[in-house]
Image 1: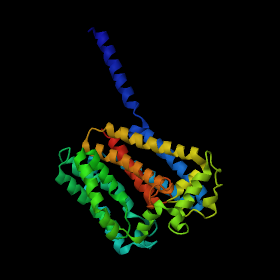
Image 2: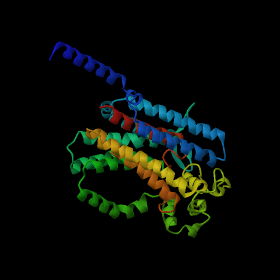
Image 3: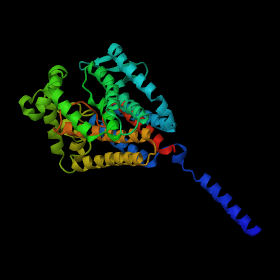
Image 4: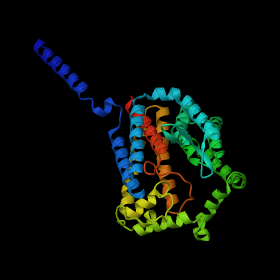
Amino acid sequence: MEPSQQYKFLRHALRDGRSFNSSASFWNKFHLDPWLFMFLVINSIFGLIIIYSATSENTSMLVRQASSFIVGFIVMIVFAQIPPKVYQVISPYLYAISIALLVLVLFMGEVRLGAKRWISIPGVGSVQPSEFMKFTMPLMVAWYFSRKAIPPKLIHIIFAFCLMMIPFVLVVLQPDINVGLIIPGIFVIFFSGISWRIIFGGCAAFAMISPVIWMFVLQEYQKKRIVTLFDPESDALGAGWNIIQSKIAIGSGGLLGKGFNEGTQSHLGYLPEHHTDFIMSTLAEEFGFFGVMTLFSVFAAIIIRCLFISLNCFHNFGRLYVSATALTFFFFVFLNSGMVSGVLPVTGDPLPLMSYGGTAIIATLAGMGIVMSIHTHR
């Protein structure tokens, strides 16, 4: 190679190197995934619009919900900066802190609707510690399986279930049968490559012990919710009231809905918890089938993007956590949607990033921040 050509090659190589360094995008610098971030923002704006209508244009509640989203997105951005290896190291400590908070609830928790689920923090408000377990639980189980051979042995699966049952029992003592605590851990086990024989065996074992759960674990109001699911009209003014009014709200919305802030079931007080557990019914009544499908499209985009990130992850810890987060998000959308439409029993689980409540929003966005960290830290 002649000297002039060699100089030309080096000159272009140096220039290309400079252009590569300078082209690092804003998203890469802050370890954020632009697609997932955009879908979450759209979901949040949609949620604020529905909250504003469901609360009869209550500005103070809208401001509190917006503040929760702001805090949640800040937490998400901060969590995205932390490398996955750090999460893998601190997962047991985060799990232990969450367990300690659940124990603290039993002694210092606020009693609402006959249950202790919240801790009051001066200057902050009420916090529901069980919500934090929804992202610390999969972190803990993913940490455990990342240290074992894949697929896991039966003894490892049993130990993982023990890890999940500790917070579940603490929440049962509140009392609250919150299956959402163990669902993320179950999804981690599922994606770890568990044998179908173990899956079917576990389902058979659960079916065998379900009578024991019915007689000795479930509270009377929980049994009544299940019975009422099959015949709401049997107690139309009692346990079946919520389901009946929710169905009326969904059905009256039709294709395009009654219009923003024009829902009668929610604004006239027929539909209880219309801004929390039954916010989907408010959405269906005011925006109709079109509004519900639009929201489901945003939910689907979030889930699909998380699954795509999981498929492109090169280590077991990240792959297990992200895939479990995606299916956990889907599970709560399915659970809440089935509840308000009368397909599933009333459980009181919120609709992700839609229902009123700060702790659930912050916990969900924190989990999404960990997903972005796993995707952007190579």
